[in-house]
Image 1 (cartoon, rainbow, N blue to C red):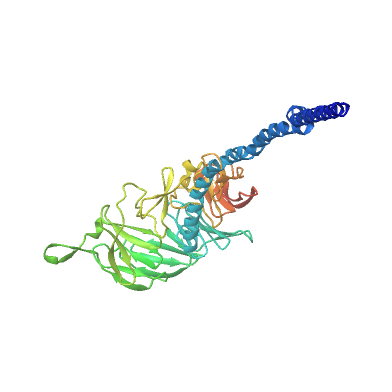
Image 2: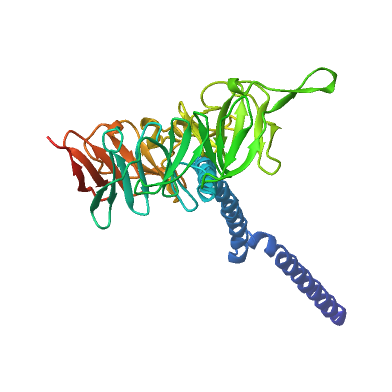
Length: 408
């Protein structure tokens, strides 16, 4: 019995030990869930989740800045507005440079020197200024800018043009060519009262009969027949040329009656041919009194192409001064001298107008005189007169020199 009792007690003790061990194991298994709420690694895990959203806005801020950069770049299209204006200036500059190289304009250039004495009787060539002192016969003088020498010319009576260092005048019914000193070189009995110099020579306006085409040495090259028009039965008849006007543009001479058709002189065939030009109303289109010019003239607030009637430059729209010639009775003389600018004038002051960026210089030091008394010669000099005499003025420096004084 004692042994049984001891064995029973031992078995009971072992069971109790097993039971307490099982309780401890179950408690140990539950600790991770309970301690997980307080252990430091578990605390960091929620922090990481909180930091992650904080990082995401930072990553999102980079694209958010891109719109700001694009907004910052939005003024670039606004900067294109001056670029468009600049294009207007540079396009006009390209046209002027082309005409300058061709030599079809009034002034001294790389191919020709041409001055029309319709209103302004002043010219310059190779540093020598030619001036009609009083507007009367044999009153012409030459002034050499380098040597300061003043000479009275021999006897140029009333020249119409100064072309490549020679005077041309219409004397009664003949054309007379004189050298730069006024001495007669040659004459041609034209029997006419008008002649038109252009690139290929001089056309004498004979109206109802063939017109002589002359070289600049006054040698006859050909006779240009009267233009014809088609009539009934496929026949042609001569047109009444006396009702026509001549004008020159871009080195070519044209004949028109105020309406279509307009004729162009073909110097290869020595005949008139119909020119495909639009009709243009108003003075801007056809000016028969100005020969040897290019394609561009001033009319109102713009510069037009004589041949097409298109506006090639609007100085009011560009916000710059118009060319000086608007105040010099020379609506075809654009005061352009081969560079990137032309000389502008607004009625009270002169400025250089830069066609590359449409900027303007500070006011230039022009003489204190009325604009009609000032004639611009080139990109450095103008001449002017007052009650005391004639003066040469460097408008870039303001330096003046006396050409001549009037006798009291």
